[in-house]
Length: 68
Image (cartoon, rainbow, N blue to C red; front, side, top):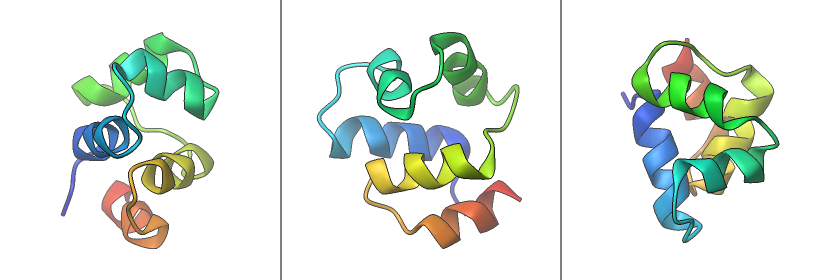
C-alpha cells in the first residue's frame, strides 16, 4: 500500500517535474494543498488522486484503494 507522499514522489519523478509545486500546477491545485497532502495532513479528492496517479504512471484504481 502506497501513501499519498509516494504518489506525489512518483508523479514528480515520472513526469520529470522539479518540485511538488510543479506537480500541483499540473494537477490544477494550489501549492498549499499539495504541501498538506505530502505531509499527510489531508487527502485529495478522488478526481485529483486519479490525475496524480496517472501523472506518476500508477494505476488509478489502486491509488483510489490506497487513498481509502
